Image 1 (cartoon, one colour):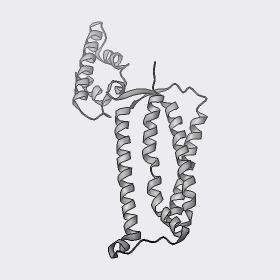
Image 2 (spheres, one colour; image 1 turned 180 degrees about the horizontal axis):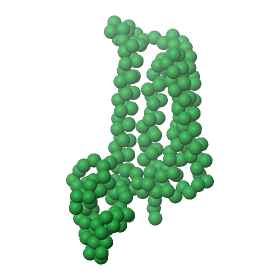
Image 3 (cartoon, one colour; image 1 turned 90 degrees about the vertical axis):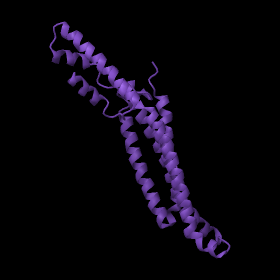
Image 4 (spheres, one colour; image 1 turned 90 degrees about the horizontal axis):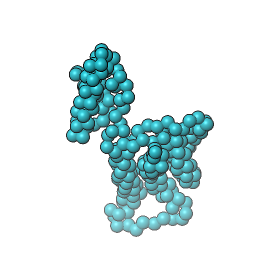
Length: 222
């Protein structure tokens, strides 16, 4: 039945095609066709039978491997709280960097991020008096892949920026064999300000790590 096949295709529109997905599609199509046929034999029209058969099948996320049901509002509030705490730490650490131009820019961005995260968290708290039992399906397998990718990307970025900064600051010293000297605490502070921002961006993979951790905490157990 073409209508059923088109309906099932829409249900799986957000999922990447794979052998598991194809087998799952075939199974659902077979079950829906059998159900529609039974209902039509009871006297219903095709439209009525189709509507009744698909009424309880509005999502397939919970059927896909690697997905789990979570209390989504609780998950969002706790994730916003964690991100806000991380951003506050980064913002505090960025304050001493404000005596350099790049440090001022980084600290200003951190300030804006704290305000945004704070607004999102407060908005979540205002909803806390409401029912927080809303359930949604989260693809934890995809989240795990995103977490690993975030750590790899941050690691590569931090390494490249560290090498780049070192080349800019001390490249000529290395090339001509001159010794590297740091004259006083002020110059040392300038070096810290140049090296710190990429390292402080560890916040990004930590957000993914916390998101993965909270997925287990907010999982629907019963």
